[in-house]
Image (cartoon, rainbow, N blue to C red; front, side, top):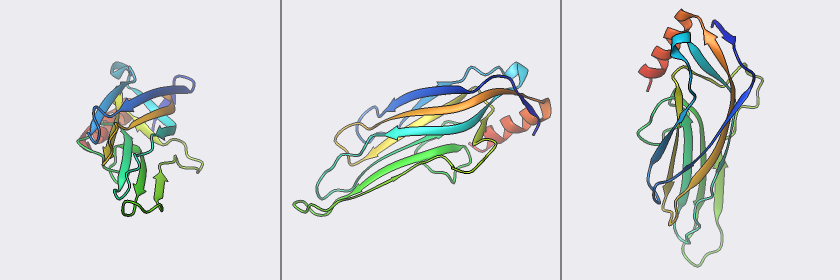
Length: 167
């Protein structure tokens, strides 16, 4: 891939909150990339802090969020090419009156030495969130680290086409 770094490391932070309990919600985060100069954003790392689902005895609850390079119709997963990260917190609760619960949390960035996690070729990315069986809206704070770069015309065209067609 032919691109040249044009900035230092930038941290882009945000917060997404469900518009109502158990309601898929999406927000767009503008990177203000310059398409006339084939500007891209090279993602180096992602961190997120997803709220815990509500504890409802006898009911399984969950909170899920993801960041993607394109708009999504629902929470999918890492099997979707444009999803950069997915975070989930689930509580499995036995019948009401029982005290044992189980919580699962997943959603870390790769720990390997990678050149980058993702390349964003369009001027923005998207955050999605959705709860399951909660009485309260779920929220997630996130931070994406990366840098601006300029791609040659062929690389830029291929990146944009790949990003848009795989959405």
